[in-house]
Length: 217
Image (cartoon, rainbow, N blue to C red; front, side):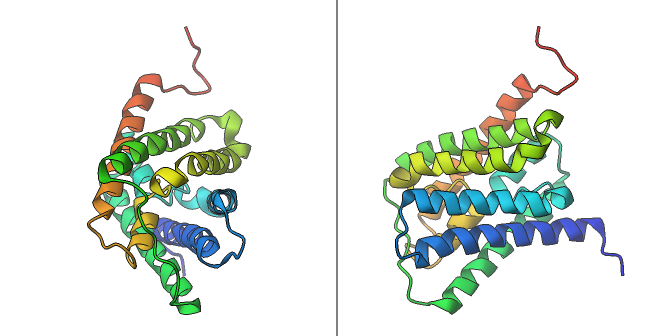
């Protein structure tokens, strides 16, 4: 039986986001010697693994902020965008559910700063992350290394933002983390920050867009 392409993309986004939550939050919850570097590497490697194994199907977005930028850049249709975002949130919640089955007694995530700081800082780190994704995914020269470039960029951005905001950069992942802790009122600061960063990245990319067959004058 041949699965329709959009369904395959949906499953790829579901599984990729699941991997990020399961590996990333799993490291936060269960690694006995977890520190900021360990957690950053876990998330970065999970993203890289997802792009390597699923990127050829869906583009390996695994993040509603990234999908928002892709919609603005016309790399996704509105229908695809809706399917991607639903799949990403479903994958994040499935990953959280499996972690809670393993251990329902995990430390709740607590936002380390005020709403305004979270909005501003998440906006800028997401801006950098999404812009890198928009740029490198269009350069054929970087194609073999895209997963590592994106994964390592995420590692660096988590290192710089973990103590300030908890390093969300992904509305689906932080939704899963917050679902069992502070309640969703804190979530809107992360949502506003990440999505505004994605929009700014997409608009910047429209101005600076560069492909391999172009020359800089």
